[in-house]
Length: 433
Image 1 (cartoon, rainbow, N blue to C red):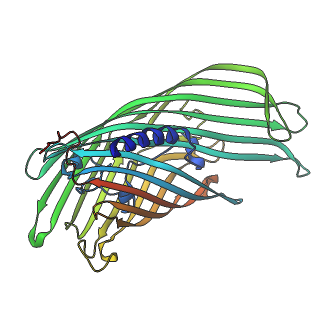
Image 2 (image 1 turned 30 degrees about the vertical axis):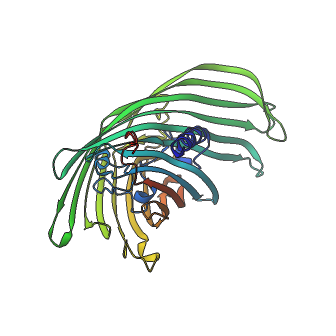
Image 3 (image 1 turned 45 degrees about the vertical axis):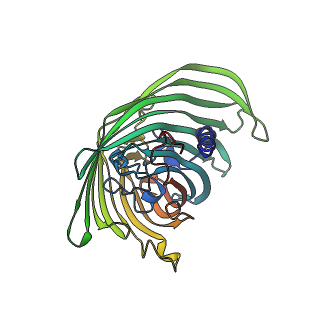
């Protein structure tokens, strides 16, 4: 019965997740929206590390090879609350958004292999910006509203197998899909009708990731972990419609379409090159761990209507460097609950690869960097192998230089990791005595 309930919850939450607005960042205007790293709440709380580390009671989104160490059936889903403050050279404003970040299930296949699958967001579009032009007397002469919504999600499946005593390999395949909408509404003073430029697109594509992990026991019960992944080059196709039409806007903001000026198909693609990720860490099992991770990606290529033809933005190479780890005072403590808590922390430095030109009629492109510092708690539940995980992250993205926007954000993440220690294989045939 519990498996049926979880399956129904998975389907319902997937439909809800695909339909909701999940972002408030102005930088989600570019390309297919603001892209997300594939990571659990536990990994995000350690700066995003995870390509080298594996744990038998936790899912690992960073490296499919970690599935080989899965010791129990695992059901996990994560939530995110984002408090965002954006500012430019003239002022600031704040917003809050909450959404479901992932739903995943995994189970071991025999003693040295495991499989997981689930649903995660790839990117999100969600912005609403207003630009005003004033006349000589200080009154508004022209008003332009930029707005966007939608995003891209993915269904994935990953398998990991231990091929040698200390070496595991894994493969992940995913199918991405979604819909985005971008609008520009313009209204001029003393002009009866306004104009609206609208772009709607359906986005689809496949991707594959290959991973490996190596573990070696050192002196004093220390464990050395090494890991690497390769995301193969992939392309997301975008097909939709681009429309320009006139409209009138009522006093309550209601839009009344009038005449279509033009309507044509909008075709484009978002081509991502190979992404490599390498990590290393050292620690003691169920006690402490410290690791580092480096990720590199070449420049994304955009084509068709996704291309920055007005020279307002471009994509360059991207990279991320993360440090993080955890500490457990005494995992099997009977006298103190706080000694069984997992304490996590990490830091992340990231060059997103997005280059934005905030000065018209120039070639002054500015890098959009992202910095975050995080910490978290793993709170054991009744059977001590299921956990409620909380994560907190403060960060800054972008800059006010070159007329750009700086984002300061505070993320609160939560996940529930439920482990069925008695079901090491979901499809194991039950015996009747």
